[in-house]
Amino acid sequence: MQRKRAFTLIELLVVIAIIAILAAILFPVFAKARESARKTKSLNNIKQLATAVTMYSQDYQETFPGWTQISATAYAHNCWDEQINAQVKAKDAFNNGDTGIKSLADPVRSRVLTYGINALLITPPLATFTGNADFSAANNNPPAPSSPGAIGSPAQTILFAELATNTAMTGTYAPLTPAPIVGTPPSGTGSTQWQGALSSPIDISPRAFVETGTNVTSYNEPWAAGVADKGVARDLYGGGGVYAFCDGHAQFMKIGKSVGLGTSVGGTVITNTNCWAAGNTNNMWNPQ
Image 1 (cartoon, rainbow, N blue to C red):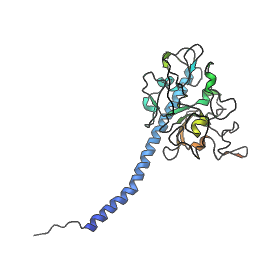
Image 2: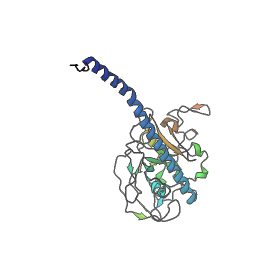
Image 3: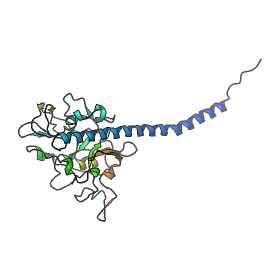
Image 4: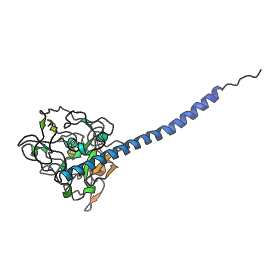
């Protein structure tokens, strides 16, 4: 009678060791492939949003979306997503799949956003340029969004940036009663709008959102002590995020590149102490 041969303990251990080695080699490859797929999807999303803005501006007197008139003297921001919604074919383009922010402008509050518009395109900077937008100027005055045609270097000016996976700001929103949109572009017609008590993260006031991840008045450098899961994405897909530019193209880059960190302007090297100077032409947030 022939005896059946079983695996020895050593043979089993060898097989288990080989499987463990293969897993250690392949798992990072699979993770990298997954991240690459997510990055590609996000690039496609943000490019769709940029294309929608181009279409919107052609229909509304060459202005960027972002403001709506809610009374004879009052205007509200936080509404670019609702204004370009008709131009966005794939409605999931507003979200990269991560935790985002419920739109303040969506009438049914179902649109979740993981991208933000560069607020320096839709409202003036502070009187002394610090890299932040002055939303207060629009409280009782018509906003003054830029014209896409007035941007000197559209291929080097950020239109949209990907937000971090947890972008919610501290505090609570206090929406007004929805009111019909009236007036002339960029407000449009036929929708509704809420104005939050806080400036929404979907309107990126650049310095605050790049350096601290929140819209506050004190800053930490992102390359030193920035909050990784808030504000503009700095840690997605291997250490950066996706951006769309005013000419319509999209790309992945690290957050430091957006302010020209390490480059030279007129012989001056751009560092974290001078990157928000008005004369830094390598700062991609500044449309001037």
